[in-house]
Length: 156
Image 1 (cartoon, rainbow, N blue to C red):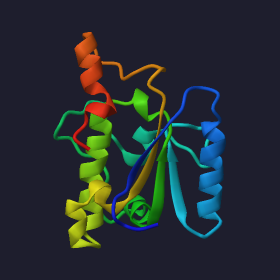
Image 2 (image 1 turned 60 degrees about the vertical axis):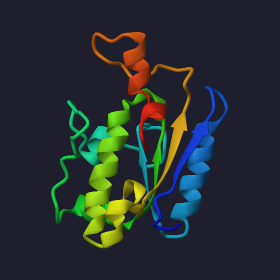
Image 3 (image 1 turned 120 degrees about the vertical axis):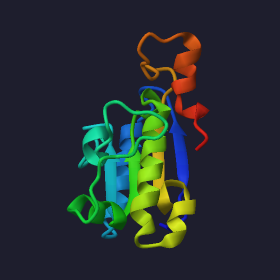
């Protein structure tokens, strides 16, 4: 795994065994002694909800960042992580990923100054998406608001 900030989508509808794919990838990478963070699905080995893992605020906008304090165990964990697997990514507002991107760029730049210019601070992310399922929920939204909230509309 390199620290160049790779960003992958795996698209598949329900029943295509994405969870099996994640379990295999996570186990394979962890068997090499590397750290993998699995978020958004409690079905994945060591999985946690994204808000809990990355301290993503509940009310976010285009300028928010995760509420992670410097010099904590969470920062050390994130800095040593080789891969982040985010299941059900299509259900999350695009701002979640933009917030995580800004936060990882900030956290990783303390170890590598070029991380500020790398997507997700140089961390590799794999996102599982099924756009046939529920899209992000936007309060009092229109169809165009929902589409604008999708990750496919993110500049990332």
